[in-house]
View 1 (cartoon, rainbow, N blue to C red):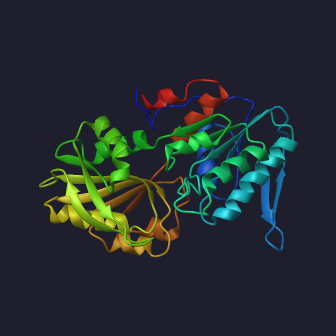
View 2 (cartoon, rainbow, N blue to C red):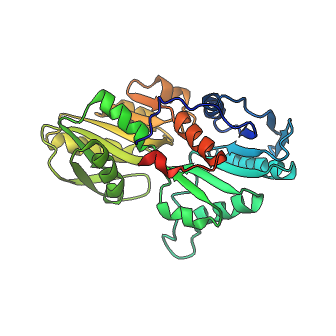
Length: 325
């Protein structure tokens, strides 16, 4: 059965510890609340030169520890926090350490785009392993092959069940088309469309330079339809805005977007607010800024129940993949 974000989780295991970094403490606290446990007492602070200091302030010896930390902006600071938290737990004799990374930063650097360039997603995976993580739990990786960058068990969760429930509550499935904003996202769009039993369309775009995009064509019938764009990351927002314009020009009645990770850098929030997008729905995998929360057409879905259920099943050595089938 599909994951139901409103289902009762029962009680968490007595040897489980949720340890929060600073990147998204509200999400970590919501996960702990779902599991009916209190977050572990810990301190993550900076010295005067911005060096990271971590102290676990309760006994974790023999415990199953889950470090909740997105490596979102500021990406390097949050990544260092994650690594040092893992090291602190390892040196405190935690039985098993799982890095729960709702948003995996550097995921867009998963291959060499040209000569003499890094594969930073692989480097980050190496760092997490060497720090002492025993498992990784993440959400909607930008590229599925990143799982293979780890030599430790890695679960890549999907936000689709949470999004499907919201789509069904808002739109049903009548007169709806799921749209991929580019050719690379067709698999993701097809999977969502299959869940709600609707057709798909594709926006074929040409990117002239980094950070800018231009929609060139729409593949599929969108005339008279409610279009739902689906993707894993929204950064500048340019792709979504251009896709919405293209779809509306082809006769779509309205366009909304469901995106897992709301990076929303620079003027993205303003760009979305001033666009013809009816709504942009993101998850709280990245801590929403005040501007995001105040935006009239940006809405946030909580993934705490999904992550909480996955953490509980991991701790109990139960199936995680069954959440999605």
